[in-house]
Length: 260
Ligand code: ATR
Image (cartoon, rainbow, N blue to C red):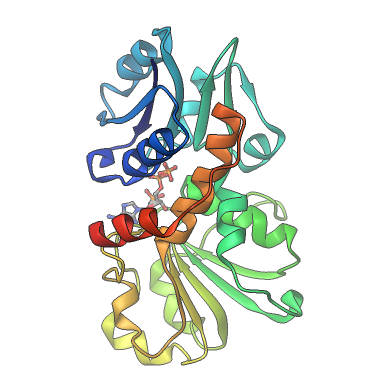
């Protein structure tokens, strides 16, 4: 029986096992998907151990290991290389890292006209955020402002451009077309909430609870819930591991909605 795992520091709470095990049953696949929850300290040993097991077919990587996993891989797909982060690992003849977060996020966006004129705010700049930045750039958005707790050099930009700090956020909120939270916290202060336009689309990549502490502050705005990205990034992983496109049926969505 093939084994697959989601690896992250809060992976026991992940819905990935539920999604993949549902598909295994539906498509009659002899595999089992569970989780590994390493600490920063034991990550090295845990990853080595699981990748050495013959029955390990694949891993999904989540916070805070999407960048750290790269040194354990033999190959990276072209997008993972450019993004600098991996959310999907395949352990076959060689150990390959793929990034499906970027297409996963794109599929959750509505059709957007004139992207070059629209301001996007990204909160946080970890692995998933790198992938979202990558796809937004690819799709023609020019004005993308990135805020992060720690100062980090921004990829795909002019030399020496760095993320802005959350302290500067209030000056930029007005006029945003889309605000995406990629952190596990809520980076917008209560007193600054009125600066966000009612027409701004609000997105969070955390999927549980569905209305996260970040999302629920915007009752009147259009929202993109984190669960759609989770599902959309999972589909191509299944295709890579088992060679077929899985479908998301009503029963699966109901089961997911009960959990979030
Ligand atoms: P990964 O690469 O797996 O996505 P990560 O690099 O830890 O994981 O990314 C998580 C994102 O959430 C980062 O932007 C991180 O900010 P830092 O670069 O400053 O670490 C952000 N984040 C995590 N915990 C946070 C917290 N308590 N407050 C603010 N930002 C946080």
